[in-house]
Image 1 (cartoon, rainbow, N blue to C red):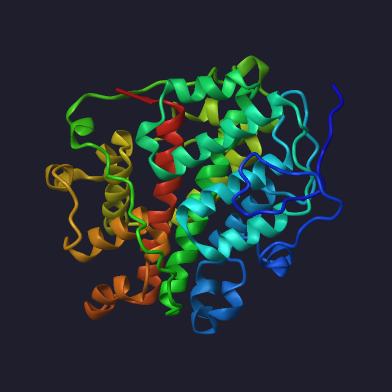
Image 2 (cartoon, helix red, strand yellow):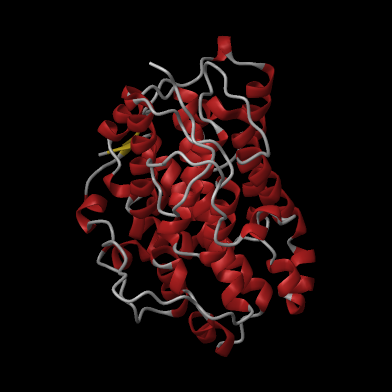
Length: 371
């Protein structure tokens, strides 16, 4: 069968459908593809009042910017073991951005995706992209529903173990990016986009936290004897990161992403204390990550297991809103902390802790948590 590729896409919510055409249709915001900072996406220039904050957190922000380049480079050549194309990656990023509802991210990833050639016209390619999109949407929206069968479906359409690890890192990174961007937009008072009828998925069932859980590899991990020098360096660098010990040999299938994630984690953790642990526990409770919930909840465990209401104390309410509906996160959600005398540096630290938890929870749940 002759394989054909179409040069562009004529709709935004394209998923796995394209139609042949002679010229690529323009994205909604073409200039969004060429922005220099592909993590903050122009916010650093808009938020002039927060420049001292950006200087204070520059090491972490640079690590996040490096990760965006690692995961979404300008060009990418697939191999036999790493088969995800740049189209696959940006398509996944756009799917996650749409779930989060943060328009700035949607504009950027749609604009970068627009000129790329889509997959060929075979049924196998269509099934592959459909499965990738469905998995990304589920992990971004309701990770508690990801199960062994979800991973098996990716394997069935030809994704390798490194592909699956990278796919989870892609979803995690854009989930993190969406919440950092939404938080900064709230800090500078930008209006939020309100879509009538949109509601968050339900929080994870409380029954999940009443049962014992353990973590085991959902995929075959890298064996020490076969590890490359790059993989060994990444594993060594990750030593000492709490909660990652038994996952590191699986995540190292994508050594670059793991090393970048560990660098970001290390630079952010320098700013974290008990308050950040609390907001990370709230994220884990909502998403259903028992492993991280048990690590962070501590004395608040029983209270959080019983449910998180909209009128909970300020730290819990902030984390719950940013985890559930980043698109509707606004300056009003920061006001209780400002009224209580919290400074912008501490608030930004909390926002990044929630965002990072949304990444790590999804990684650990998808790639190993079993009940």
